[in-house]
Amino acid sequence: MYGLIDCNNFFVSCERVFNPSLNGRPVVVLSNNDGCVIARSNEAKALGIPMGCPAFQIKEHCDPRQVVQLSARHIVYADLSHRIMNILGSEVEDVEVYSVDEAFFRPPYDDVEQNHDFLARLVKKVYRSVGVPVSIGFAPSRSLAKIASHIAKKDRRITDGVYWLVRPEAIDIILRRTPIADVWGIGRRLTASLLERGIDTAYKFAQMPSGLVRALYSVTVERTQRELRGEDCIPVNPVNIAHSTLMTSRTFGHVLTDRREVQDAVVHFAQATARRLRDEHQVASTVTTYVRGDRFREDLPYYSNSCEMRLRTPSSSAMTIVYYALIAFNTIFREGMAYRKAGVMVGGLIPDTMVQLNVWDPEDYPKQRALMQAVDGINQHYGAHVVKLVPESGERSWVPHQTHLATTSKTLRIYTGQITKLPPKG
Image 1 (cartoon, rainbow, N blue to C red):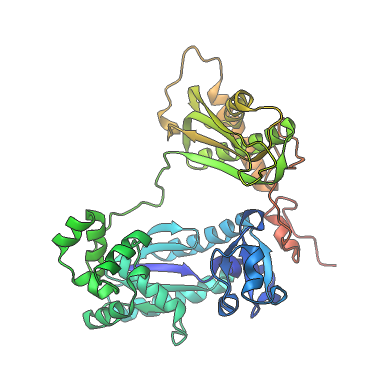
Image 2 (cartoon, rainbow, N blue to C red):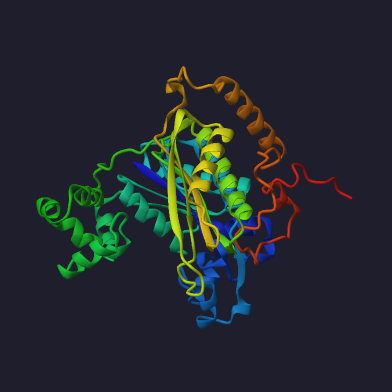
């Protein structure tokens, strides 16, 4: 059996944790630069606001004054996600984090009713401890668990947040009601191809001959089909799977032309990427910096370029990553150009325990590792960016637009590194 825990309207639910006055109101969370809708409350969905709707088009679906629009704060969402996954990991085994708001796991009991009661208590524990409502579905395979969790979230008759698909007759009924587009792993192109062949439900897809599915599409699509039949055949993805590359990038709030301002963004991105490397206990062999203009501004010259630098010795030190990122930046920067986006990517990642030192490299890497551990410890205790490298000015004129950033609770300042403890009452 597999279970899937899914946070309900996660970004909106996180905002409601800190501002309960948002409960029962139409709320949407906007992407970087407040561009488009990336999360909606049930009330916003009822108004007809689609996912991905540009913010300026909300008025085409309803009166914008009816809707609370909020700028995304991913650092807050990531922290609450981490808390939820910690609670899940303390209760069950074999947790596989699938996304920021979803995770697969193994239910602890063989008996279905025991699992149902246990998971219903887990739903209450998460809400009581974190304040975010979650739904759980469990079934013989991950694909069926995905469908079950969707039902647990959408069906208002399910009051305890748990739904299971185990009995073959029940699975057949649900698959007949599930559009093929809603099956996990079936994308737009595959949906269109299946619809051309008259396969419009998950049940019809599950009844196709497996050999035909493999011949028409691929072995991966065949595995999805077998999953709908209750077979566990999707390879396990460990929680601590290592990335092959890491990148930090942002679209600026406005066009930048000043070299110092763009460089400030590159330094910030390089430090953030180095921190992610250390969190994953990896080191990088290459550092790539890229810059890009605004292709939609016809009144400005468009320029885009990138440069990759190879490190003498793989490293996760912020000083080293920033050093090479700046060399690459100085190589590609052009005066008189208008810049709207930049980013830093590291590649050639290997575990930090497998670094082969270079006898000709003058850097003292053991000392750098000790320094980075001290810096990470200070920033974790006192707030992000308390200790940073000198090349980052701190002016941050490049930050994305966040005109709808919530400021209703002092607690939120903890997540931005402004304070580490709440002031005493009174």
